[in-house]
Image (cartoon, rainbow over all chains, first blue to last red; front, side):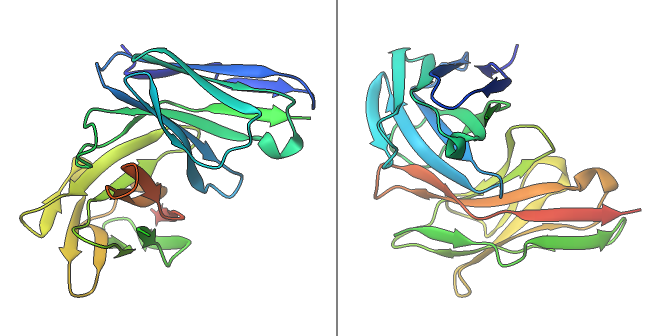
Length: 115
Length: 114
């Protein structure tokens, strides 16, 4: 079983459209994250949720809205897609509410291409 | 603010030779440091971490890292490189004073030649 799974793996869409990426973890972790990896491979955190509560919102445009229906799921919805949103989006989870000692487990990524 | 720096965009090494991928950190307080590897078109995989204790940390796939407080470094090492080690390596620090987020370096591409 995949520990952190994301769907879809690839997403190609037109500017202005709205799209969602889903993430599920079966590790029993309390905290989930969304990271964005740009074309230069830089990784930047976007959001984190702990037990369905938003912890980090890293100055991301409000076109991006995370939703956590339960602690095993964290979805990312993007409105009015722009060319600059093209990137690989990674979901991750960890089990260490605030201690800082636990590693993050990452999904395989969702490559979004906006045309 | 907590940060890590990876001064090399790419490291080239011949198979069988030792490899080092460099990382320096800037943190207030105790550093919680991590190394991750990313193979092409894959997610990041955890290699090892330093939280406290022994300065030499052993991790997955024969990798190890040495925590050096005086030099504020956490270099990744392997005694004998394999072609299959070719990948993108990220150093990271956990910002426990600010939302506990994991902050990544810019990554170093390791190329191991046969």
